[in-house]
Length: 214
Image (cartoon, rainbow, N blue to C red; front, side, top):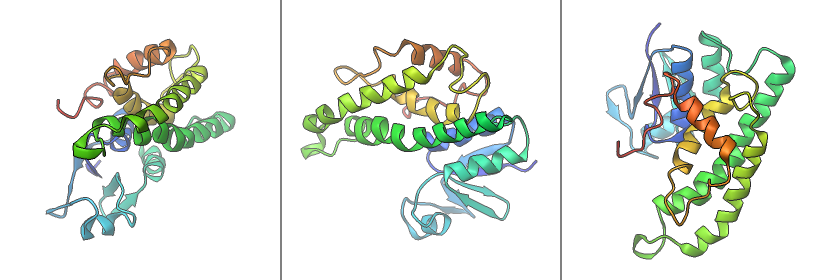
C-alpha cells in the first residue's frame, strides 16, 4: 500500500482525526504542507487548487485529491481495516449523526469560539478578550456536559469500538483538557476524563495528541 499524504498542520484537530483513522486502520501516511515539491501557504493559489475554500485537511492518494474530513474518513474506511462507522445500520446512523455534531457544534463551541480566543487572542496588543471568553465559557461548559451525558460505560463514545466520533473528539479534548486556569472548563466531566485517559493509552493514539510545542 502506498503512503498517502495528509495536507495540513499537525496541530489541526481535523488533521489529527485523519491521522488517528490511518493509524487505527494501519494505513501508511505522512503529514505535510507540501505538494509536488511546492510549499503550501495557507490560502495561497496552491492551497485553493487543493481545496476551493482553503481548508485542511486534504488527502492526496496518487492522483486523487480529496478535501473535507468526512469525505476523507469515508474514503479511508473503504480502503482497509476495521469499520469506523459500525456494521449495524442503526449504529452507523448514530455514528454519522454524532460525527456531524462533533465536527460542527462541539468544535465551534470548544475550539473556534473558546480555546482559540485563549491561545490565539485577537484583542488589542494580542491580549485575551476577557469579555469574549466570559461570553463563551458557559456555552463551552454546557457543551462538555452534553458530551458527558452521551458517554456511557463502554469506554468509547458510541458502542464498544473506535469510531469516527472518537477520531473527531479526542483531538478536541486533548486541547480542552489542558486549558489553564482561570479558563479551565472540564472539572465536572469525570466520564469524559476517564474516556480520554483510556483511549489515549492505545498505541495507535499515542504520539498524535501532543501539544504543538512538543
